[in-house]
Amino acid sequence: MKVLALVTQKGGTGKSSLAVSLAVAAEESGLKTCILDVDPQGTAAEWRARRTAERPEVEAINWSFLSSRLYTLKRERCDLIIIDTPGANNAAAEAAMRDATLCIIPVRPSVADIEAAKPTIRYLSDRDKPFAFVLNQCPVGGRTARTSNAYRALQLLSAVSDATLANRADHMDALAAGLGVTEHAPSGKAAAETRALLSWLLAQLERPQRGRRNEAPAREARG
Ligand SMILES: Nc1ncnc2c1ncn2[C@@H]1O[C@H](COP(=O)(O)OP(=O)(O)OP(=O)(O)O)[C@@H](O)[C@H]1O
Ligand SMILES: [Mg+2]
Image 1 (tube, protein in one colour):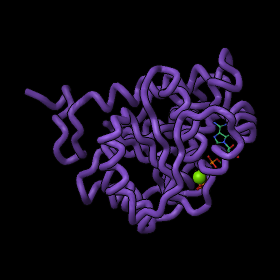
Image 2 (cartoon, helix red, strand yellow; image 1 turned 180 degrees about the vertical axis):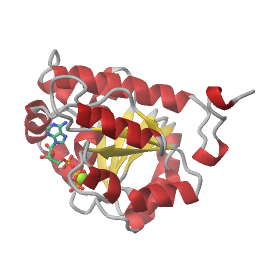
Image 3 (cartoon, rainbow, N blue to C red; image 1 turned 90 degrees about the vertical axis):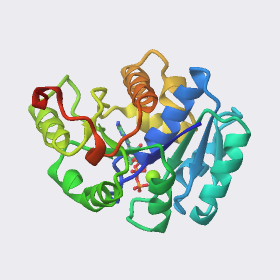
Image 4 (cartoon, rainbow, N blue to C red; image 1 turned 120 degrees about the vertical axis):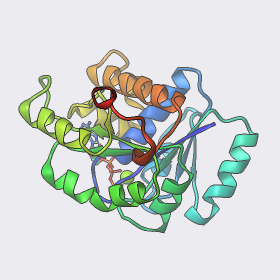
């Protein structure tokens, strides 16, 4: 069982939107997936209340029960757990970061988002926890200069998904309808980008997880 946690104290970067759409896409790809919502705001839990489909399972839980719930979900043979956390560097976010196989930090391509993620990055780096960035809500129309600049800045800090998500109404409409983007508009661009992101994340999860300190040196730096 793999555990992804969506974290960053910056609000509105897309943690909950990615949590629900990635979970739906993961279920569609055959993975038994569960969302654990430790954000008292309850965006993922409320999204679940608007759904008719049974899967993915969504549970709103207090962060203090997170470790024990993960233990039982493992015994229930869940393949993938996605934890949605509050936009705050608090006990709930820290519990998720401690228990995750991999933390995902969604950032919009703006200096404000990158700077606001610093406490989250510091927490993860200090504990040598593996984490990766996902650029979300990027300007449409391919890799703009703003997206490329943000990509390069983030690469200095950790892995960055090469699957980026553009700013697309499908994400807002899907959330409102209690759907993942791949259910809401299966042949749309937002759906394709979300599937590409899921593939990238699953590939990361298959690799041995290492924090920055224990990463193998980059190829250019070897010998
Ligand atoms: N790629 C996207 N394109 C368009 N809108 C998006 C995208 N990603 C997220 N949004 C919208 O941005 C808003 C904030 O997203 P979301 O609630 O997922 O952020 P969050 O990080 O979970 O916020 P919080 O920190 O408050 O929990 C929502 O209205 C959502 O529909
Ligand atoms: Mg949220």
